[in-house]
Length: 476
Ligand code: BG6
Image (cartoon, rainbow, N blue to C red; front, side, top):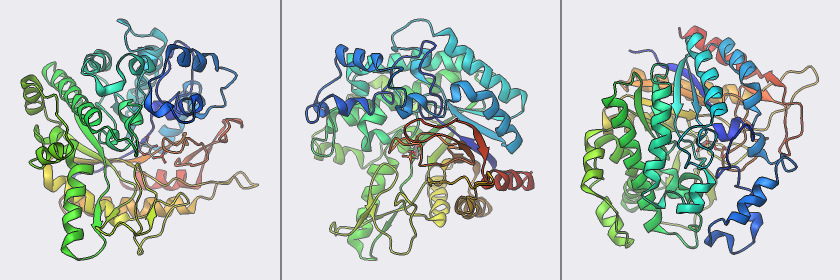
């Protein structure tokens, strides 16, 4: 059985802060800003130049805004890497901030300060013999692209993405072990603003045409950067990633099980099928027709998707989901979408259902479907932590969560699933992507900051830090 790489992950917009040194505004920087513009019209219009100026002018007075502070990783990266090294991680997953390299997305040359920042981090990881996993784009899209194109709803965004992605792949071509073109590519379906930069598609007014074309353009862009990497002999492997929901039927009745099949097809497999097999699932045509969507697919798109599929499939896993034709059941929150309550599971403080065995089931499903190595790209527990008077953070709840989930990943590997790597999400405390708060903590390293950006930003190892360190050492 091959050894699983034990890792940790962060995302630029949630970790870095550093809203200076040439970084441009991106969709994450403006998340809180957008709703403030107007209470009811904002969902249906694009940002204007005046809006952007107001957002820019709000810094630094408004620097308490969590995403603009992140964990201040732009300043603390060196000591963070030092901690990561003492943890003994096999692999570290970081993301590149698009608007730090290309502030508006339209520049021809990258911002040298941004390049130097990632040079330093990647060099330090390579020197420490920690494998490097680079997410080329994790949610944050330059606001100028939203202004001009309304996000990924426009085909031209493929070229803007490719300019940035080719620069990234070329620059660190000998240093990076794994490349992920786009984080949780199916998230655009559930969260069009985060995933695709599409404003104006919400629960009440869901714009299937823009969303499914946006997803298509993202998948073509992923295939084209994979093609570029493969054809230019880049060392690292190319990974695709979706958010995993792992549905169970509420009842054994056939209707619930049929719904399970359909829900997984659209919510979970849609993008993974295209990126791992090169073509849309057999079920896609009916779904698109039913929703009146005409996909803008060219012969060149088809060729790119088919000839350059991913080398590895990955998924984020936080909980399993329940589906039923009976919609009046109690709902609970989850990553990206709410689901029905599973009476046999406990929940986190944020109401997400905890299901370690679900991770093992999901690993089987992914491997069985694609027969490519599988990565658990994210897994972790968002919880409130307390620093005790002796300076210790006794997060035994997080240790228990990891123990149970990692054990299931190992069992899946023993049962024959080819598991390449497992990543603790938010290895260091970062701002939550979903609820935009610092106090929902995932890390094994604590960051002393609250939701308003108050605090020293001092780093402290939690009890889970020592537990994970020993776990990794005992798996060498
Ligand atoms: C994943 C995202 O969906 O879930 C991360 O890739 C995110 O960016 C993670 O942080 C956990 O979600 P949240 O909302 O608790 O931060």
